[in-house]
Image 1: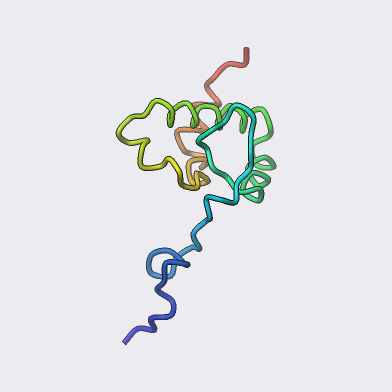
Image 2: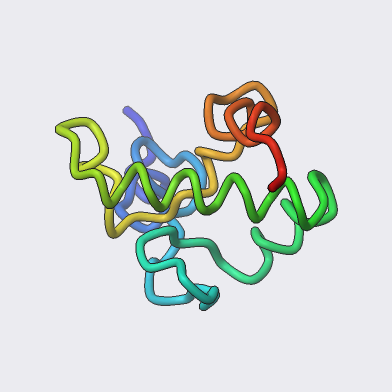
Length: 99
């Protein structure tokens, strides 16, 4: 028999990582749909730098605004997982020229 106290909606599926509250978020100018907590934003800022992170956030926000069938399920949720170092958002930001 498994201990049921570890399986809860607070800890996500089967006691995984805790869910992030989408109401605790940073406010960025000209960004409407990307949700990050202040701690997550600080970690990403130290990892990627301000210029690359800003590009990546705008790329993800415009993808959400495009309203594709895949992007709809991520709107209104915490988006920290989109900023993996080998993910498409960061790679697209690296390829985007400054200008």
